[in-house]
Amino acid sequence: MFEPYFHQMPLRLVFWAVLATLASSVAGAAEPVSNDVGTVFWHPDEAHCRFVRSGAVEPNPEKPESWRYIFVTELISDDISSTERGYMRLGGLLRELEFLDRRETASGEVRQYKTLGQPSWNIEVDMRAGESRKSKLGQTVFFEYTGTVSVSVGHSQRLVPFTGSCGVEPEKLK
Image (cartoon, rainbow, N blue to C red; front, side, top):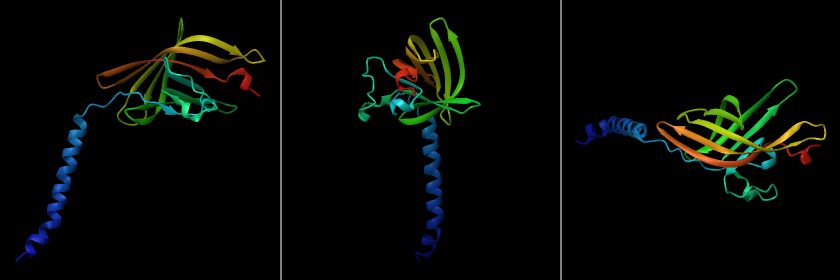
């Protein structure tokens, strides 16, 4: 008597599972993606560029709880070439940034990135140069910057003012 009902039970479960999956994917596509800019936990000596929100306390290499940045890059190089990768926490997720373009301006430079994967965020970093320092050999190896990071996804854009630096402080060079 109950046998046909139990026999059809797996088909009914599959039907409801597929329906639930479709409903959640449609609802997910309609939800706006957050353009919240969070912080990235990174050791200051391991970052090539490291920016904090304007007004935030500059991280202390001796205090790991202070190693919070809104934007960092790492520089990977060998004797032939170098690559700089960027990272930000966007919409709650740590995202790797693909470098697209760099152009010099009268006050510094503007860099453009986009996130890898979906959803795709567009990042523009407007860096206004401040103080710079040279190594014992006379090479400029450290720059301080102020500026804004512009984060856009979909029709939403957020501007975050920052302060920070790129390079290695000359006193840390060996």
